[in-house]
Length: 146
Image (cartoon, rainbow, N blue to C red; front, top):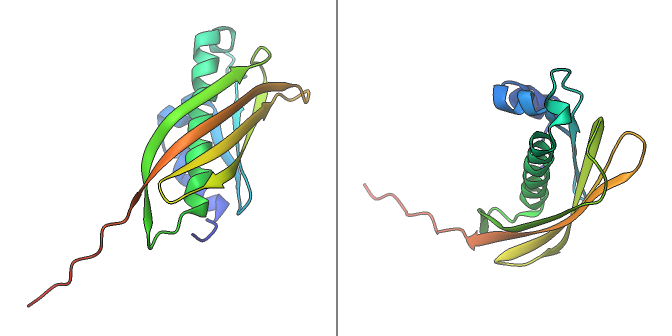
């Protein structure tokens, strides 16, 4: 898959109000890694709610993992099927500006494994995780007869 134009991706992302409300934004998508950020400095009390901040970071981690798989997908043979498991270890309190980086460590015909690490704006590792992602064979296109 071709690496997408990040300005276009960010514009499409910002057009979704629920994503903006969470503070999640794609920063970089390339062949080796995907980076998303989560700005938890909401200014309205949500930043003090650990359930809300962990939900925002979990959402961003899952989307970043999916983006990493999409970047390695052989679209002629495979298609995305969904997250099998998302295991995240929260290592420190979530606050401020969080950077999430994902890397595909294994890519098979039917599944992939993605490594996740997140840091806060002080450089502290706040999260480590692993995602198993399901792939399925692409159905052959039917020929049109007419």
